[in-house]
Length: 430
Image (cartoon, rainbow, N blue to C red; front, side):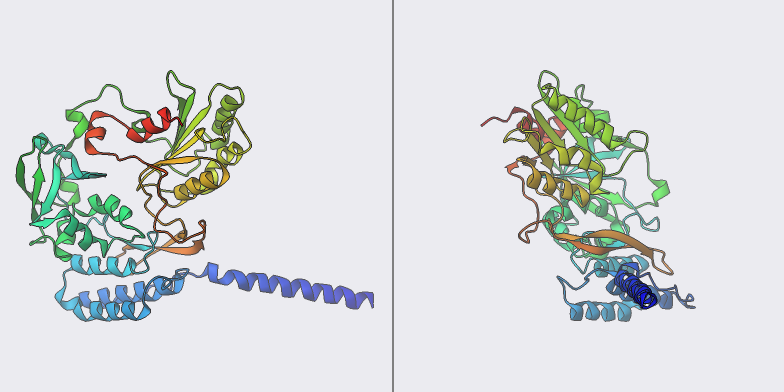
């Protein structure tokens, strides 16, 4: 009798283990093996299209949650039929459009880093009042600070809408933030119907003095790009705000001079083995406990994600400290680049504490996909990213986490070294 019970217990254990393993199988799905390369250029591109579509729809957590399966299959068929008439760059753009189909900013085909695409010698940044040139080739310092107005007579709003089709996104704040990576690629602009030619375009800008100018931009290979001069190389600033310092560090802090406010920059949700987060968090908590600081500004504006738990040694212990966990005690700075795990940190601060958010809307939805894995297409070797989990962090499905206090970051403020969001958080009072 006892032997039978032992056998039954063993059977239950084995059965339970099998159930557990089976439940994990969907999370362990892998990309399918690469096929043997086709003999022709068109055949190889067809293989890449089929491989992308079959694997993305199978591996993604819920590819058609927000989009149409029928529309996707129709787009696949159209691309397969058009391959003979399209250039390689045009096919890459259409692959990016298929990758952007689910409306998941974590999922997509990465084309902006591809060395096969031509680039123009231009670097721009997105600000709340538009896109401005922040770096230019040596000898063209007069371009610096110019505002982008149009590309081949298409307004920047038109350019934004055309590129939105191929930029994986959940809201337009992310598309605006990502646009500078694409306006450097004439072949991409040509493929979406903006540039007239695949190797060049005319860029209309408004100079700092208000004058309008057209600049002929010609694409070159990536390794042929000239030396760049940045805006602040040409217009140096003596006293940068804290948010413009130590961007290469994953996280750091300082007590703002003449205040009892600690500024904590969390630039990447990645642990630094040489400088772990927990001891740094302990230092900040000790400052709070000793009464040396009574306000915390937690800056997530330049954090594109990683692992949300990295910041928990600080965030989880703020709620239990009444001296800081009060209205006006904790501020969280957010913006379009606040993404993924950084977004999760901002939401945690909102839920766990009385934190006030300051800045601009973030670049992805509070409820969104994540836990990214990757594969490469068999012939072009383009990198593909896809989400394996869905995270529900907010009570309602909204397109962004909006700040409690809006703080524009204009080009003029950036050029002058002013940080309006930080100033608001530092100087806030009821």
